[in-house]
Image (cartoon, rainbow, N blue to C red):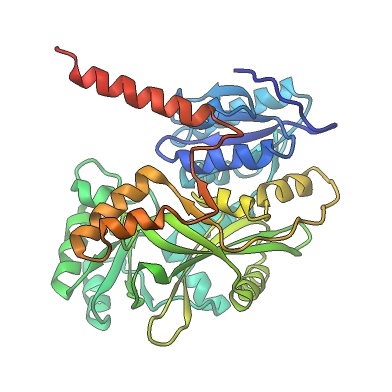
Length: 410
């Protein structure tokens, strides 16, 4: 697929990875780079990621299931490097492609300019058990955590927690075995109300490996969730930070931000810059925090070595982290960023609607409150963009075709 855009003079194409099941991050990356004049090649696991239809996408390459077959991803990057005269900047957009690149390690060096942190550190951050150990060594402000290796250790840890508590997979893929209940396979984390409920989950997943962590629950509703996005350049300098407050998340209580406000939290952002430099981090990161509703203390839940699903809000607020990372790996001087804007709102329509249904069932939101919230201005939409209408148009056509298929007689 080739679109008629005018790349910035001397701009090398960037490659954005699009894995199945996580279309937000790649579209955010394509737009953040494309609006700066960077031509973007989308390398996708599936045939029709929304980012493919962006006006900034100059080429689409499909490599089915590259997350499960990293060598095929490596071959595709080698071919792109050959055709474009050298290694290209590559941006992972979600955990599966981040893990695939990290496991390839130094094999990618001839074919890509890495915008990632050190692969060994990335894999440590992705493994919640290894991250817990790193957090202890580095003195990071994480909730109390246990990483059991047996049911006996799980029983011991469960007895030392107060409830409610959190149980979650050590790795994003740890709970994907088809024999596990669907509710567990789809969960990023599960809030449990009792020792017995926690142990039921442990016993359910144990036959396929006890790859989970048990964690103290930080009290407070979903509006106490904050993310800080940051970029640390190759010399270890914190170039930019940005903070967003999640007013709604999907799934409620344990999911990703779907209704978010941009704001400025100087103390929290300074702490993030310090802790990333403390662990030797380089590249784009997004850090998830929850503020303790009684003490006001920010507790670090995880560090993601990539953009977030709502990072387009960061760009629209004047903090274009992908563009900074692109300039860094291409050896270009950093530009002075435009004035940063707080008070913007972000919504991911479909995910947010699903979240609200859950909140309404729990009595935490009303439909009238939801509708009023959509009137906030200025509003940044995940898919809909007047300057780049292709993805929204394609998703609408796909939705209409699906409805017609379901209504047609078999």
